[in-house]
Image (tube, rainbow over all chains, first blue to last red):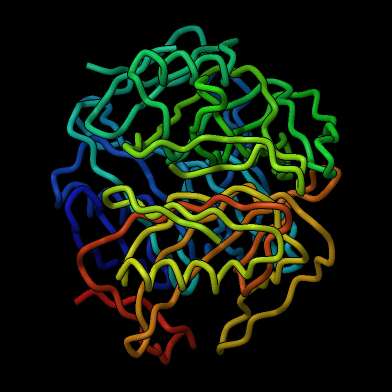
Length: 140
Length: 140
Length: 140
């Protein structure tokens, strides 16, 4: 993974086999970005772990054991207990064009991926929310 | 719905049951943002009203009576007759991962949703266009 | 296609029948934007040419001969041999709501489309990469 910083934008380029979440966390940490908005992402993923939130803290895995085009990446950057946390939802396209979508629980890049994040100045943190079972966003 | 402003970014966090379009309009109005670009949105929606534009002003509803992951939110903010109008298209994921997509005609948040908009300075307005039957964008 | 510039944002509005990639390149060239990030895009497309990358430089076409809603547009702007190159992945919705997704190889706008790009200052170029068969991104 390589990256460059251009003002408020962190642009990352991933290589084949790179772990997407680990790579993003590494670049964000290097740049001291602790809150941000994902501007988008394109490329390919290898058997990405997509999931569907059933409530009470349980994510149901979506089986997808193949290479797919990453066609939309939305999400944000915040901190949980002072550690950077990247929340991503992904939309991907299968070989015939069928789209699959869900919470992105993790996965590796196939061939290449190009991701941009806009850094924010104000802090966003996540804390456990009893009602939803999620670590929901809190603004300072 | 809670929100914060960070420079040109309006970041909104929705709670379970919040109306997405109403919440966005409320936050935009509060912040005096009358034109903007949606940077993205993640979370979940409850039976969102997606639709497909058939022309001549007619949107065909897409049946979707279930909770879904919101995986991509694209669109913009403009005004129609001086009132804020939010134009959104949504991509969502069903429980098994199947993606559905269309014009977002409205809907409520399930659990939580996190949406970011970048404010623009120049005005964008919408006015009726005879050719398409749409209220198309106009730049000042 | 009409466009306006608002600080670092180039906002384009396409009319029925406009070629999306050609229109974007024309507006970017006019504004001297040679690197950027796509913030999003909504509207409709007419039989867009979506494709899936099989490796070794070969894209497999995804048959889609109909009008679709454009629900997510991700990608970026760089240069190849000093010429502007727009790399886009699109997510689209069919009449019944079924989503399709892939690399966007080209296509024309149906009715209207509204696209925003954030200009970057640092140069991004693309050059042939033996390992993937792709013209991958390089940062200066």
